[in-house]
Structure formats: structure tokens, C-alpha cells
Image (cartoon, rainbow, N blue to C red; front, side):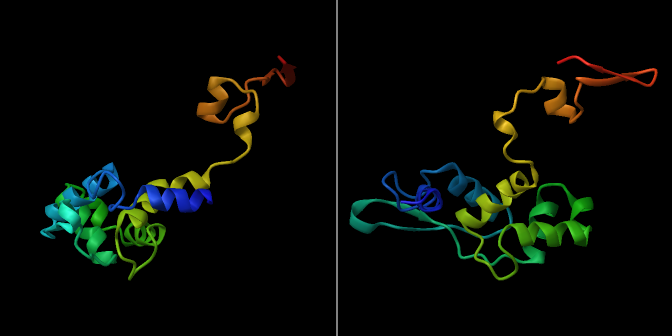
Length: 144
């Protein structure tokens, strides 16, 4: 089983612990209720499952989220809102656990990969500046 499939399975609201058993599902319930979209429920085989409403991702949906949670200034930034829609899967995507997880983690792809195995200092990790290459009066001091 691939890592991507395992990830998708971990977000499945009908998994062993039932819908609402993962935190992303619960966060989406709060988001949807805040904008007036109510969750449903069903009881297959005696288990109660909270079912998220079928909400379609759009520019307007992201604007609603931002406004409801006090970010009206960001809601007016069309470039930002469009980027948020794109990283979640694009307009017309069903905004479910998978789309929300993509949106939350999309910035990870902007980071340089492969540096996890490299020895570095905390300063370099945080600020991106290699302290071993300090310059004093046109002279480079190599501390390594």
C-alpha cells in the first residue's frame, strides 16, 4: 500500500473509530457550521456517523471562511484567496478532509528537501544563514 493511499485512508471518516474520529473531520464540522452548512448523520449497522455536508470549493467559500473568522482584510485579497483555492484542489473540488489536508500542508512543498540529513546549526535552520562563513574585514572565517 502506498503512502498516499495510507494518508487517504487515515482521513476516511468511515474508518474504525467512525466519522468524527479524526481531527480534520472535526475541524471541518466547525468550519462548515460557522458558515451555516450543517452536518448530517446516518446510522449504518448501529453506529452513528456524522456526515459532512457536500461543500464545493470556490473563491466565495474561502472568502466566507476568512470573514467569519475575523480575517475580512485577507478576504479582500483576491490573489491570496485564489491561491488558497488552488492549493486545496481548485475551484469545483469537493471541500472534504483530503482537500483541507492538502491546503494545510501545501506550503511544505516550498521547502528544500534533503537537508534533513545535513548537519547544521539552529541559527542556520531558522534564518537560512550559514554561520560558518562569517565575513570580517573582507576575510572569510571558516569555523568548520
